[in-house]
Amino acid sequence: METLITIKPDFACVFLLNGAFAEHADGFAYGANDPLYITALPLSAHLLPYTVKIAGSRPLCNEKLCAAFTADNRLLIKLFPRYNYIYSPSKQDGAVCAGITSAERLFSAVKQKNFNAAKKYLSEGLSATIDNAGLEAFFNDYTAIVKDDFSKGSGNFTENSGYYLINADGKGTLFRFETAEGLIDNITSED
Image 1 (cartoon, rainbow, N blue to C red):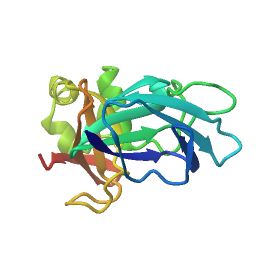
Image 2 (cartoon, rainbow, N blue to C red):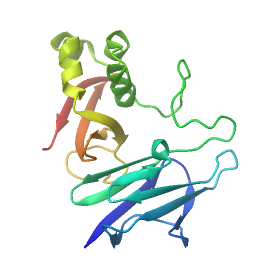
Image 3 (cartoon, rainbow, N blue to C red):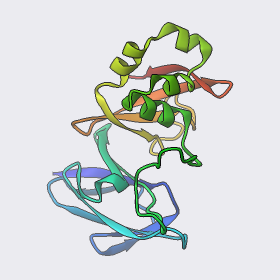
Image 4 (cartoon, one colour):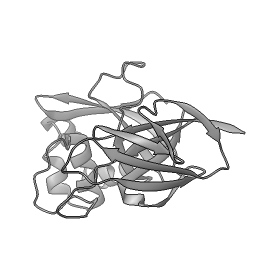
């Protein structure tokens, strides 16, 4: 049985897929039970190359440098950058990271149970309608958030508002984080 795989990096790169060069990995069929080795070769000198091994829908090495999840009967793989100076796929406390969105910051703050920080990313109207327990309950079943770079322009999702919330089984559910004046004003799902 084959599965359709789409790989999207957070940086400009080319790939080695099981040792074969590929400039794009926008969608290809691959055996669902066969291991897939993805080597990301960044096109920027300040990033380092690395390899991840995917079996089924689970990363088995360099897990923090990628997110693999299923959605719409596809396996979606998001690759994160590996930096040259400090090898750490996680965000450093107190560091201001360019490109981190309000939705990602909200998710991180809720998972760290820092509800004061989490509410800074919510509009006044949304913040007034949800308490800390409600925020925690909403994100409780999810282990990760990944910006939707896989299906731009699909459905009612705008280019910058779609995010997959990923559960412990590796299934991604697409949500839209609507903003007003830079703050999250509503969160909806098409499911």
